[in-house]
Image (tube, rainbow, N blue to C red; front, side, top):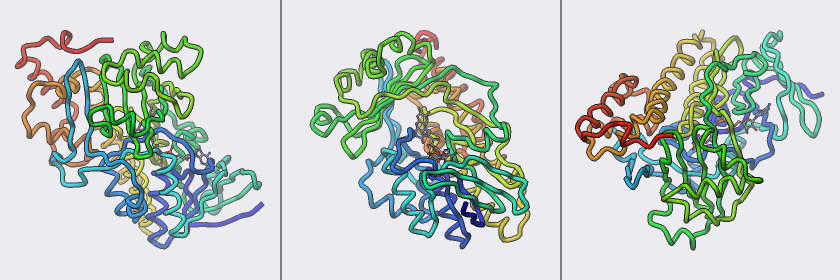
Length: 424
Ligand SMILES: Cc1cc2nc3c(=O)[nH]c(=O)nc-3n(C[C@H](O)[C@H](O)[C@H](O)COP(=O)(O)OP(=O)(O)OC[C@H]3O[C@@H](n4cnc5c(N)ncnc54)[C@H](O)[C@@H]3O)c2cc1C
């Protein structure tokens, strides 16, 4: 069995692991990534946030991504009951990137992985981290297993960016399972091509359709001619369609309920049999401890509605790397304060917006006849991922302002909330 000692071990070569590894490598540290899959590999999470663009700029990974022809995302369209809300990141209140991409993650993550390897970081593809000892004399001892046998690594620190794999979450029993919300997702890619797209208005725009207060549909067109489609919501909405013999038939049945996209996609050819992720929301009791930190999806995941997953993955991966760089240079880092509190603060802002979405309040703001521009800009900033901007009242008072605004809109428009919101 081979044994290697490095400065930092990273588990997982998704956006979080590659952001962390790239930063550490640039600072001269010896890093390895252990990655269970052989790339390119599928993962969901295809609509990005402007927030991540700054992270790729800082880690030097941006030029490799810019060299691809990924579809540019400058905002998103939301439809409900014949009304359209056009969210444009160009109206951001916070200074920062005002656009990003919508991407097939297999290709996107492959580009990131290659760009990190070009910085001298070895990625052990097809190697699964099967054991991690955090009390080893050299700090952390990790064993991985792959087709070519078993490998052993030691390092003072491990960054767990293993996403849905949740290596340390399982090992240390960190998962917080108290709050199930009953939501699920069903998705696939439609092989669409430009001919079919030419028949609809704004075909390259990422779009959402609200089908009930807690059921919505996404359409994410890629530059490769395919379009990602998916339904997300409370599992009650899926039960009838899930009786179909195949997931393809399930999603076609669900498409019958879509006013905006049903015609476009119902006869589409699917690139793969639709996948289901049940109860996708997950939290952890703790994000860091002696010798380790959890980043990205491994640290937790709220909801796909505002495409915040990859934004949090790069924010947390990069922050973990910056703190570890300082620690490796001899500084004492208070990971609870500098890492965990920061990530949880941002997550709490997003969580309020997700809760306000499913309660209907944020939907009523989106579809109001008129919202003052200054409010709009501050809300858009949050939805671009700038959830740490303390000058934005829609960040600092995240638990109150959307509710208050929705209330005043309903008063002004003279409508009863329950009448204007579609219900379950
Ligand atoms: C239905 C749904 C829709 C979503 N839509 C969006 C969206 O539009 N936009 C968005 O930003 N986010 C979205 N997300 C969230 C998104 O999937 C994740 O937040 C994002 O992929 C996180 O990146 P990551 O780097 O943390 O993890 P990942 O990209 O999942 O990478 C983790 C890597 O770790 C590897 N790994 C796992 N276990 C091991 C192991 N034992 N050993 C070695 N390697 C291992 C995996 O193979 C994988 O490559 C969505 C999530 C769901 C459920």
